Length: 89
Image (tube, rainbow, N blue to C red; front, side, top):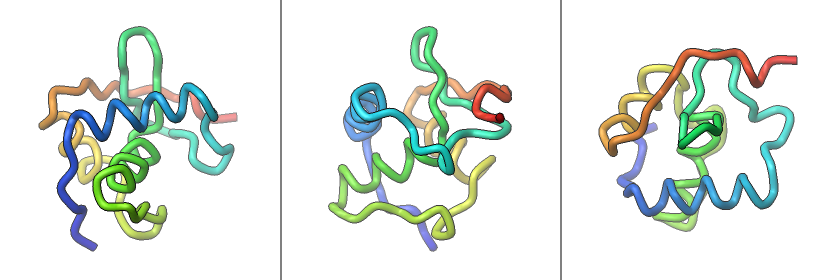
């Protein structure tokens, strides 16, 4: 599935939502994190929420890939992606 267009403002809203509601256990990151300040967020989940903020419809985990497909879209908006394992149990 092609990832719809979303903006930096949509990502910021997604991060605020995660700060308020947390990340569901099944949506935690396993290899990469979106770094905002000193906090880490799961890029694939952030992207799904950002798309929902932009279009009204969230992406399911099976609708798009993590890794390069997700990370490059967030990096294109000026965000930093770091390799990490903080979401693993």
